[in-house]
Length: 159
Image 1 (cartoon, helix red, strand yellow):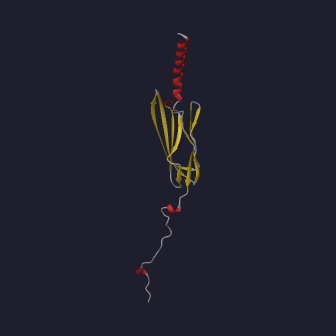
Image 2: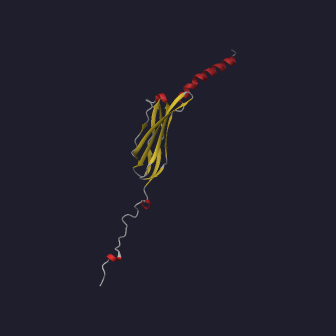
C-alpha cells in the first residue's frame, strides 16, 4: 500500500473500532419535566422523570428519586419500554409522580439521578411557584355569610 492509502485504511479501521464504543454510551441520560411550574396551593402537579440506558444495565441503573420536603407524594407510577437503535437495545424507565405542594412560595423538586458505567447522571431541580388560594375563588367563599330570614307567615302578628 502507498502511504496515502495505508493512512486512510488505518484511520478507517480506528474509526470502525471506536464507533461501537461511542454508540454504547450514546443516548444514556435522565430528564425531569413538569406539566406546569405555577400552581395554586391545594392543586397537584405532575413531574415525569425519564431515565434511558442500555437494556443490559437494568439491574445496575437504579434511579434515585429524592424526597422533597416541599411536596407530598400523592401517587407514583413506573413504566418502561425497550427500543433498539443501531444494534443496541435501550431501556427507558419513566416515573410519573403526582405531587401536592405543602406550602405557598418558591418550591423545588429535587434532582433525580442514576449511575451507569461509573458516571453519574442527574436532572436539574424543577422549580415551582405556588400561590396561596384566593378567598374570592374558593367554592365556599360565601359560607358563613348566609342571611337568615323569617318567612312572613312565621312572624308573630301584632295586635
